[in-house]
Length: 351
Ligand code: NAD
Picture (tube, rainbow, N blue to C red):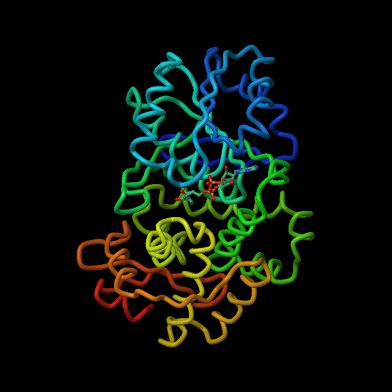
């Protein structure tokens, strides 16, 4: 399956298919004519796919330099970014060469940000290997690293030359991270696609895995539509942040250790919908449906917020804050989302 992200200044393909990884060398040859490639990955992904990717590229005549970072959000730090810059420069990669991000959202965001800034921009390709990265982070050009005071605070918009998605790699993904990605799949159903939402409600994990190619394709189509309408996240694209305002704050409050990104987003989607339902902004029964679908896919939806004040403080640093206001994403109904602008101080009524 193939789709194309069409933007004013750039357009790029997304290839989705089982076994794409094995054909990588031939595919990249069609879009890149120099020799050198730096492949950035993390230790976990390297163990399963590092050598496979390196050898398929070498067989197609490329000279490959593999750079391996530690797995986990901590690698999206300024220190790791500087290490990565140095490793890419040590490999003598120039602006005419290519960088590949082979991994989950952490590797994708870190590598994409490095590619966007080093030497004022080096072309790069995304090969996402986690479910979250395959349906979300590898598409749309947002790249970033974290600061100690918050996630993704240093970032850029920088699109890849192409995205190669091989659903077969999900076989080695830890179950917890598979469920984590399912939170974002559920998010797409909530904000834009009622049919997808009810499919997720019906299907157990086995059936989801059987139709994972189609599910990835559906999610990528939704992301494509939203990104093409609002590439720089000024308005429409914000709906992708459903559940994220609170989710990011929860992740940060627990120092990125207790909850994964998707687990925190799952909590955020349910809590905010429960409140918006109480305020008559959302159709009655919607939060219950979200809770049900989250439980079906092994995601918690209820949490006792011990320290509400710290969570609220974390939200005020959120990138979605604009002066005294913050945009939060709510649902009218399943499949129908809207942007709700509120004064920052009123956010406490939603938590
Ligand atoms: P991750 O990159 O940490 O991957 C999760 C874990 O799975 C890691 O331990 C990784 O090593 C491992 N892994 C990945 N693929 C594997 C595979 N096929 N087999 C075995 N192990 C594998 O986390 P993630 O959930 O993929 O991404 C989270 C990050 O994505 C966060 O930093 C978040 O901010 C970012 N994000 C970015 C965007 C964007 O638009 N740029 C959107 C959503 C999330």
